[in-house]
Image (cartoon, rainbow, N blue to C red; front, side):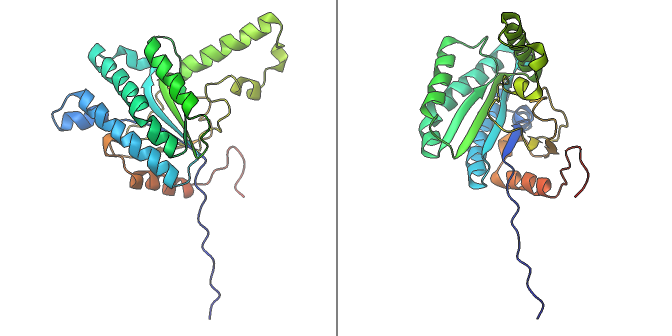
Length: 243
């Protein structure tokens, strides 16, 4: 009889980062206001966080509100901020029970005092968890992040705390909002659009870019599994040669 070959189950990527796109189109297809799509998008976030934990993903970063989103209508911005408050307030106990540590990345400028207090509270309450690290990119823009890093490093050089010649990739990375988090293995975008949209430009240098046609409110665990299957079929050389 031929010798059986053991099946090796691919290890899940350590870090998946998601551009959650399609809320507006999902709502428009149902003749509903855009904020209805955003509300359903929050439900998809809950499913995605649970799915990431089920699939053994350690780090999950979701693009919630970008610095460019300030150009949207005022009522839509208010709805997005209200959803952020609601998610933080209502889900903190669920996140605690499921071992999820929350970190909100992005600029705190333009955020209200009560929202900043809520963010700091959920970060503190979940700081002891280590099953899944959830980064919520809120009021985040990649160019804004790099601009803030440059200012911080320039200030350190000006004060004499750092010599310009000592600035390396690692020194710069330590100033990023994602410091301490491994770079994403996957940048996943829903809705079929093929743009990075100012999301983690430094961190995504060697990430696999995967696009799914599903609109974000319809996102389920099977869609995340599909992305992982695509990822596992790719050869990641990161500038080197095939082994």
